[in-house]
Image (tube, rainbow over all chains, first blue to last red; front, side, top):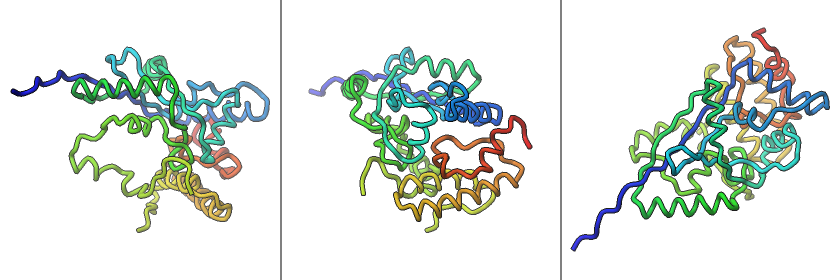
Length: 189
Length: 80
């Protein structure tokens, strides 16, 4: 007797590329500089995400989109951004970033998404992992090749979410294979 | 294999690679060499006249290691 085929469930990955235009870059750098020199408020966390871009994951058709972020506490933006650039890790925190993606779209940034379809048991495994992360992430946030475990992109892999289709051309056409032949995830010597 | 692209059109990508290399070492000497390379790459990009997108934060070095020219160029609200 064959066992019943489980139903499929969908996980949606949502992402947008940051705004690197001169108009925004200039305003952003000025805000950072003003904050650093005590002349004014620094950029908001939302401004930082507009500049950097962001990705998140949804298990409810993008009603909620969970993203991985650094928990920087009360540290000024210019300072934690500088420390990330230096390779330092920050505790990771998972938030519902639906509002971030909505604001990015309203701002004119192209928000893209794709679906990862899994059988029910594997979907539930993913939901459990995501729930655990939402309560208390076990990963530190860091810029690529720094001391952190992952950023918002590579966090998706920590959730064991399959991102590749399985086409060899897709793997080999990843620009990072040539540009970044070595990549480190986590503090080690 | 030299993984760092050398063509002018690849310089923006080069900044990204250099920033990763910078975070990958704790040696001040290596970091100085990387910062020098980064500064020269920024100069080439400025001179190219076609540098229209500021590198993402993860493609930048910490402020103290960034070339002044980077900020002079990107703090201007319009193309110089």
